[in-house]
Length: 384
Ligand code: CS2
Ligand code: MN
Image 1 (cartoon, protein in one colour):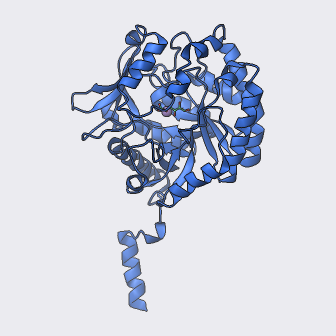
Image 2: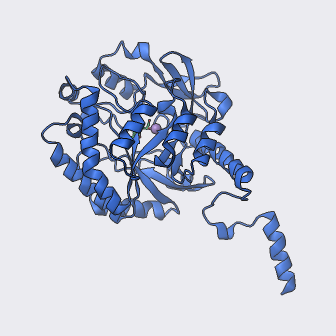
């Protein structure tokens, strides 16, 4: 397992690589080129520079989140082959630089959706929150305005204004598109790209819909176990994988997270692990990672990942805004750092109890000397 933080690059993120480097056990980042819109090719040079920047700070590029999919591919317009060709080339370019994990989603028009980006909790921290009844009072373009208002002036991933500026046109592309059509468009896309992944070793990890139900009447096809199994089965390759996002899937309390992990098994290439509180049907708010702070049993979730032999990348996903930090909503340093330590602590305890191995992999094991080793070193020294 590799622990990562999501990082949006030097111009878009308030968190720098040096700070991430100082979080114990976090060995890398997942990132993107946020200035490239969906459908634009990723030049090799840009990817190389990105990897170099990350490596120069002692971290690794653990994967890309996301290479976004152009709406013509999702909607299946006659331009889709053109955009699929570009996507294939981008995958080849990423592989040249050693990338082996790419996250993406197949949600029409909107990426993740919340009705509040800074809900104040009883402890004074703020979190992202969702209320279906509030959402139903918005029109799609109002939604964009609402998201923008509380974004702390950061560019929200998935809510890029230039793309959503054409929101009416975008919505028009999906008029009359059923879930079955959308699913067939996903299969068409996967059939075109998975052979490249098999050649180059990139695991494609589809992200579940967030929230996992239809918003604004748009079709959504990655909402639950059945959907995920159908997607993975439709192109049955070990490179056609899932991102297990506990927060997205789990915002529907009918989704049994632990069972989903156990049934997807080694087709989970990437995990987003966070906690949330269900307050009423269709109403939830994000929480600290600590199990008792929310509705999920994080130990059981991590244990299921452990038991299926999960060897991919985990990130603590969203955190609360705490200690007066101003950042992209959900993506501050402090609470994600706390979350990563909680998850690593659970993983460490699983390693101890299940394999009797002493310690999770660390960045530079050669330099880490435990008390037992110091004793051994001293003894060796005294022999010399
Ligand atoms: C993320 C998504 O912030 C989030 O909720 O999990 O934006 C995710 O990165 C995309 O949907 C994946 O393409
Ligand atoms: Mn996620």
